[in-house]
Length: 139
Image (cartoon, rainbow, N blue to C red; front, side, top):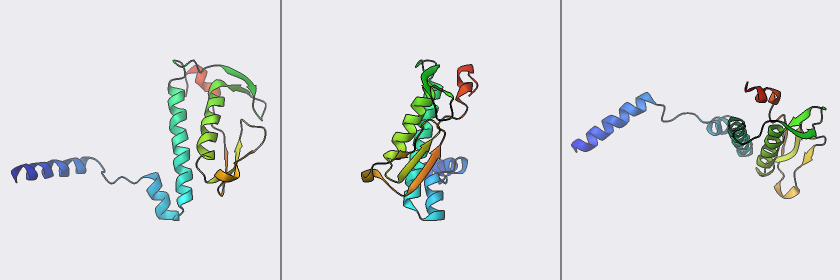
């Protein structure tokens, strides 16, 4: 009984220091919209953002700096990280099962999601805005 009291006391102290019931993006969206597909979309985006952030952080070690040798839809030279980030976002969104059309700055044409994976959302994105700053280690 003494151990339980001490343990409970520690938990209370930790709970006071940290928000053990922190609001999450998923909970916020679900509570305010009741749209499970929107929650899936937001989680897919969040996952791709984390993957892109990790790639940017390891760009030097992974030799991801420099040009990819391609040009995007606006005529800009694509960087290796632009191409990889675009692929990460497309894969996350196509496989989420909630998107129908994807529009990326890196692609000339819209990406039509295959019927078996299509949902109701259209998403437009620039997967790595400001990528020209990365080689300078600004991002």
